[in-house]
Image (cartoon, rainbow over all chains, first blue to last red; front, side, top):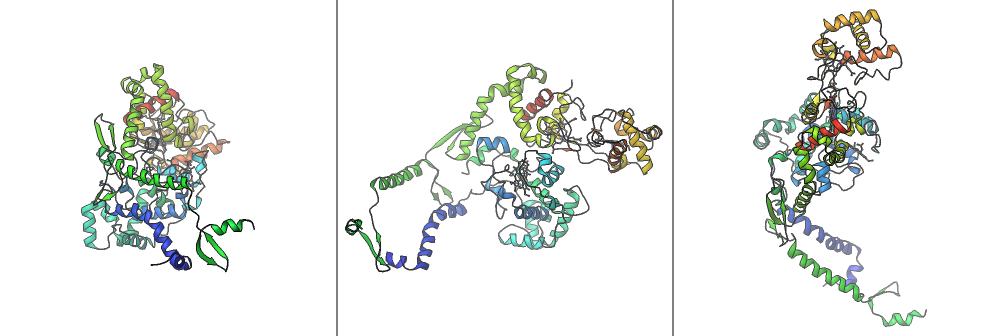
Length: 244
Length: 307
């Protein structure tokens, strides 16, 4: 038997035992979620981000947008009325790290995709007060600089380790084709990442300049896809109620 | 140290540090202990009524239930959860607004406007929807923004100011496109002439000789007339601007101080064309009912709506 005194006089032991004691609460709440069948709701349409969107997400994190913006609509009446359908766990299943958050200086962004035009996002990010005079959001003029695309494949490979189904070989590509369809599967193929990124930026022309690929292209592409993957008109709301 | 005696009678943990440093072992206050025991009992009762422990691949749902009517009016009963609670809240919201929403759904636009109760609802609910979804582009009160989004309070409509057209605009969105140089092969002199002609149409200062040449180009080689119409009054079906009024959206003529700057502003638009005017489609974001509310709001509250 360890005695009280032994623990108190042994700093290392006390640290380990304290950590054990306080992690029980967390573990009891979190671990079962990995085993409960319906933690992540089954819905169609949710896919990993394309190379360009993923780079946009990295910039979102780099710039600290999450300090003012959450990406989770909670199941409350006022939130549903303002932002749209409450967020599903399934919608952030490929997010590492997730952007749920609870600090909202600005509005929630979980369903901001397609709410505004690309042009609006560009002007708003360059100078928020030019669009919303009372805004307190900072200006991000440096986003109009060229995007470094050289390491995008590495970034996707890192996410692959966490379980995001980006493909590296033909077999995985075929598997994705079956799951997400050929169009999406192509976008998730790591060997083509850089090529896909440039193609999407030029075709989408998010920053209003079709020739070069900027950080703005990536960030706006990311913002425009937020919350648009699930078509809620296809589902009965009563179904999602059952999952919790 | 008069406390020493009292302390000596109290229990200590028995540890002695640095020769004489001791630690008391006082019993917890009774009230504290009882609060603690009661909270444990509360937790057990809570497990019984509310979703709690994981079991296998599921979890205990508890005996508490919530009964709500979904948006199709079907009654459902389910175990307690925040999502079910929301469904109930939304049902309550629907029921408390039903009186107004039914009227909004049933009345045609022109009667909606004359019914004080329904119109009051349009003004408040429509106003909130407008602030959330439209004001970031059309600005507060729908005043518009030069070179970005049109003013919704004036009588000038790019796509038409009737209820039907406004409803169509909000539902499906709009995207006005003008190819660079109107799609024609024009040199700088020709663009200069066209700009002078366009300015002359709304009584802005212009060079008469250039305007005359521009008139010919507009109706000939420049093919501008094919979109803007022979009278340059625009075509509401494709949203080509009326060039004969003093209302500008893209060429910032009002802010240009001198005649040369006005010409420059119009030339810039003709040279590079227009592709930026994107009004997003709202049909996936807003319900048909909300779009009807907004249509009435834009037409009758912001003013400027036409028959």
